[in-house]
Length: 593
Ligand SMILES: Cc1cc2nc3c(=O)[nH]c(=O)nc-3n(C[C@H](O)[C@H](O)[C@H](O)COP(=O)(O)OP(=O)(O)OC[C@H]3O[C@@H](n4cnc5c(N)ncnc54)[C@H](O)[C@@H]3O)c2cc1C
Image (cartoon, rainbow, N blue to C red; front, top):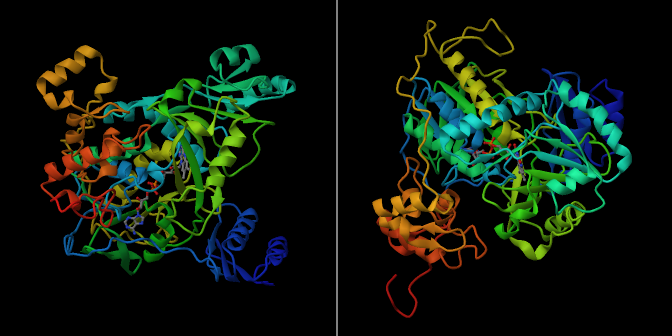
């Protein structure tokens, strides 16, 4: 049943088909949905229907109560203290994903006080470590959207950013394969479209060339489009590198720190409450991923809704990496259709593993990273049509991430609409990793404009800017150093260079992880970086012990001992990923741990 508050008959008719009570009202450029339904899927369906009937630039805010499957609240750190009480940063960044960390690094080019808070025990624990690592071409995007704009700009920035940050990045290109030979002339016609879309160097490949370049493809594939701008990066290495370079340039990163509330006075955030005390920032950046809508609500600037969407990937043993030469291969029966998912594919990571997936499911559980067997099975069945050599026995592990789309399926990158000292970097679903370098440049610029008392995005453009009594100029950070020195990865070095490093530091000569060939020296390096790291997963994501076939079965206890020794704690205090994830329960056979 629907209460007709809108004059939009089409929408109201469509909403009437959903069981429950739904009201739709247009106000302040938003369609507000209220009412009651029993399942999360019904609420999402209503949001999508509203989005499908929006006027240009309008957005959907979904306030429908879901009785049986409500949206889960955030998991918060289990402790509180006063470590941040009274802090007055110029800019507070909320969220240590790739967006927040890239923003903090961009901001560190300026002579300002930056504080990034992340509720987890490390950066990149949500979507920013649970993705495919593809630097997208932008095949499925539409001109005029923020996704398109930031994807294209971000993709072009990757070479330089990764060079500066010492992060591995490759650009082997991407294939879109087709089974029907009849499509080949259409693919030639499509070249004009790709040019119009600003995607350069696209080529049509016939069967012979395709099979020469990718010898493990299914034999029924007859032609393909090749996009040379497709790249691949390690998403958590990049996020960590951004955070480390920000810290190196003066930013402060506080982990285990959750924003729990705000005071907003006359359209200005005056106080931000956390589990570690109250903070008084001049500008707040909302880069909170699936929780960005909650932060927008706290800041009294909620004009979009996030509906979390889960996706799972299987990781294959690196010994099968030779199966695929490009970044990503996927097969389409027909030309790309309008879709909210990139459809997944086979991705070869910079570390030489293949990823198979991801799929896409709406979920009310924003931090449910459990992987369903059915997801992996479906992806395998789907992509076996692209390469028949794939087999589930090649899987070493899997992971699940949760995307953060808005109902408009576009990014929200702008200054606050009603709240003056706020910048949103929200709705950053895929291709958010690709877009992050470009989003960060704009978000940092918005923050600096607000600090300087500059242009407003708020409803009333004449509203005086509150932050600077008179316009001020924010100076550049004269000591900004864009270069970050990475931890050497000995397994990738030439033998002479390896020997030199071992001669300087014998710890590099002791292999701890046999699968990934990681030395004791690299593990100790990971524990001594500008961004604190003291967990087994933290070390694993920085230098890869435990990422191989045995998944840490051999090296796990050795890594644990190294952490305990380096941090001066007992082995039973070492955690897998953060407080409450201690690995050891107590001594065996009466011995001391
Ligand atoms: C399965 C999957 C595959 C993908 N593949 C690709 C791909 O190949 N290429 C691509 O470009 N993109 C891809 N993406 C999208 C990409 O991963 C995201 O767009 C990107 O990681 C978003 O980064 P973020 O920093 O905005 O959000 P997140 O990484 O989610 O970070 C948000 C952070 O905010 C923190 N936070 C939330 N609330 C609070 C609070 N109250 N206080 C303090 N901290 C808080 C969270 O703990 C979290 O760490 C994929 C996503 C998924 C799920």
